[in-house]
Structures are given as C-alpha cells and as structure tokens.
Length: 342
Image (spheres, rainbow, N blue to C red):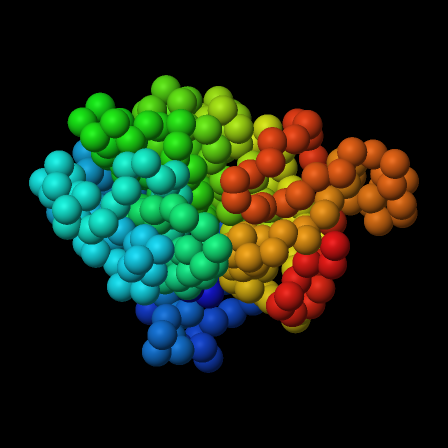
C-alpha cells in the first residue's frame, strides 16, 4: 500500500474532485487531519488526496470476472516465477503450472494499490516455499485494487466471492479439498479473505488477516469484512489500529504486537504505512522461524506491566497456524529484522 494519511480532526477542506493530485508544498495540516480524506504518496513523490465522502461510485464492482482477477501459481519446483492462470485455465492447472492437488495450498491476497509483484506477496511466498512442500496461489486483483479507495473497498465482497468460487471448483472438479487451503490477506486483502471464507461456507480451515483495513468499514456490518464466522479458525495480526488498520477484534485470536497501533523502528510514521506493512513482514518472518511468543492478556498496558506473565502463551503467525484459545494476545518486537524476540 502507498503512503496513506488518515487522522482524526474535523475541518473543512475545499477539494472539488473525488481524487486530487497535490505537490508536497500544497499539503496542509488541516487536510492531513481530516478523516474525510485519504492522502497517499505516489511513486513520483506527489500526493493523491481522495474524498471518502465522494458520491461517485461508478467503478464499484458488483461481480468480478477473469478480466479483473488472475492467479499466479508457485511451487517448490517453481518458487521464483509464478505461472499465471485465469478461470478458463482452471481445469488444466496441474499440467500448466505443476500445482499438486495432494499438497496443502496457501492463498495470498494483496491490498489496495498492489498487484501480484507487491512486497506482501513476495515476502510470504518466498518464506513459505523455502521450507514447506506446498502450493502458493498468489491472487492478482490489481485491475480493481488500483482504482480509487472507495471503489476498491466497495468491491471486496465481489472479489472474495469470485476467489471463493474458484476454490470451490478446485474442490469439486479436481478434488483439492477446501480443508487443505489456508487464506492470508493484507489490508483490503484481509477483508477479501473473509469474504472468500464466507463464500465457501466457513469451511476453510484457517484465515489469516494481516492488519485488516479500517477506512469505510464498520463493526456492525460483517457482511463485507473479516469476522470469526468466515473460517474454522481466524487469526488476525494488528499493527496499525486506528489509522490504516481496523481497531476491533475480528478473529478467534487477535494479536497485537507492541500494542497494535504503531511499530518500533518506524519512526514518526505519520502516514501509518510502515506500521501497516509490518503485519506481513512479521508473518513472513514467522514462516521461516517462528519466535513470536505472545501472552494472552486483556490490555497491552497490563501486558507491559507483567500482569499477564502467568497467562496462556501462543505463537503469532507460522504455518500451519497453531490454533489456540480465543482472545487477545500481546508481544513486543525488535526495531528491525529479525523482529521476533522469543
């Protein structure tokens, strides 16, 4: 995800378009402090400002198609250059890609403004394939993800339904069982993962949400976001709650490294982008050597004051996920990789 700014003051900003391009010198504190707007940095060093109250919803996707979504298959024999397939190729996935129906499959779903080459996909698939005999299925929904945030956010249900139908076909037509699939998603991809689980009737064994996106989602409406009913076990890692992430429990087990709002080593991180991306950095590291030991606790304050030392321990991340008691878990990390402190 690009640099993104969301803060909590309420002011009035006179922008006339749903998305406006500004130079750094044109940014104001009033603009950055208005939760009505998202501001993110482009590759060119400019800033795009999106009005989240814009009535323009012409690009909302109600039904996704193979023009919107493709899949890249990685295997232990082909860990570096994924083979792209679309829905029309699904019946021939084994011959085309080396996909093994007898292996477990890890499905990876990127977030907003990303594609299949995004860091989240590369970190996770590379770490997973180094030590595990699995298929990795990287989802590319970039034709929708690269629209404005409103359109992308309102399309997560359609994208999730489409991916869920593909996984059901793998089960029905190729006998690759849903129970052998783990789905992990970052940001908007976390909510898409939830919709994948709902589409497959909650039969996916494990869903992993990596700092699920916050803007425009609500706690009451679970129809378009990740929640515990979406899979048999939902494991959520929170790293930027209240800014880019959604600050409520959404899984059976919710993990809050360093309290879950900001991450050490990210500096001031006014945009939240560094802390937001730490969710997939932590998860990728956990696939190589999981030393993210946590304690069940009611608050980070109590954890930090050693009031939960005798409580249940759990590991954050890893694969396959070790199911644990439901609840909130806390830990501290290092400022830089390797992040886990044991």
